[in-house]
Length: 63
Image 1: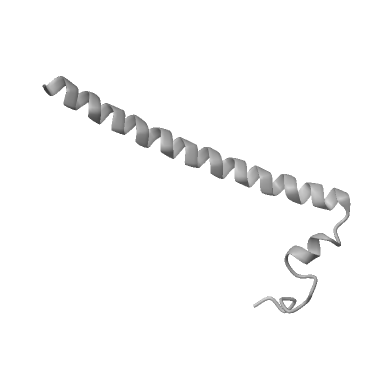
Image 2: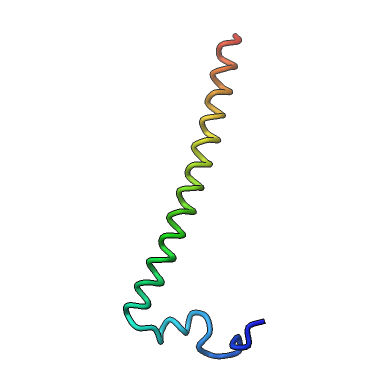
């Protein structure tokens, strides 16, 4: 386990000690990960919706 875990500077508090440049860089990196995750989620949602629409179309043709 992290030996610095009990340190008051761990986690969120440590952000207060970063320089502006470090903070911006960290936020930019996190935003990039969030964007990637959002795109993957959206892609998965669109695929699922497409499959559902095709299923409905298939039913419609059968009638």
